[in-house]
Image (cartoon, rainbow, N blue to C red; front, side, top):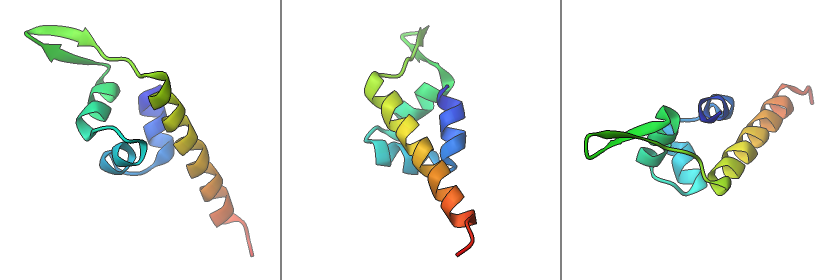
Length: 72
């Protein structure tokens, strides 16, 4: 789900992370779905706030694309 939302937003990972208030590293962990902690693989899941923010950005990006394509 994270990868799909990031693709729909169509901005850099840095821009997305800054816009929703998380670190770029956190976004990379979310995209990977896991991370290494003390030699063990640990699942990384989105918080509700992160999911909401990514979905909202994706919706806004789609609206902006539609408005840019609309003739004046």
